[in-house]
Amino acid sequence: MLKIGLTGGIGSGKSLVGKILEALGYPVYYSDMAAKVLVDTDSEIRTQLINLLGTEVYCDNELNRPFLAQQLFKDDQLRIQVNQIIHPKVRDAFKDWCTSQKSPVVFNEAAILFETGAYKTMDLNLLVTAPKELRIQRVMERDKMSPAQVEERIAKQWPDEAKVELANFTILNDEKQPLIAQVETFLATI
Image (tube, rainbow, N blue to C red):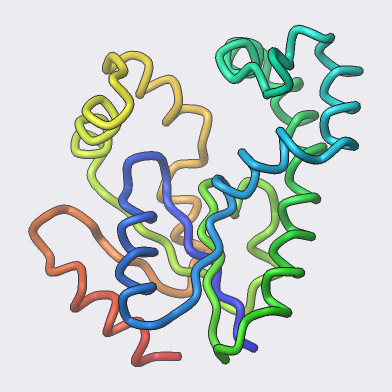
């Protein structure tokens, strides 16, 4: 089975590329969605997060996402620690998911695939990029954030220039280049 990482910065359109791949018949594992489920359902994650951040990190038996986000965006070391708790569990869940797939090719969509080092566990890595102004606009509309909030999130991720060096293929989602044609070009190379 060929495992392909699908990544890109916030607002780049990696999830849209994932939906295109699914429409073309390829299974796509969405790591961010899996992480959201795991933080609410995995007792080890829950215990470790409470030990790290206190009981306020959970509210009504669910992760207190606004509290966690507030803590993470002001403390880079804490963000690393939280990632070290959650990401191994997400990778294990991806491995389990792979065993249930019949396709010879699967995709793992993850926002910080390069930042966490998870890209090394993939056979290939596909990067989706977009101009920064367009990314900011997309996230503002989608998540109802201010430009400054989006810029703050972008600053927490690696720049595209660093990711391009590690990617096997890059798709530009600038709303000018045909996206489906770029996906098909990539698929023809595998």
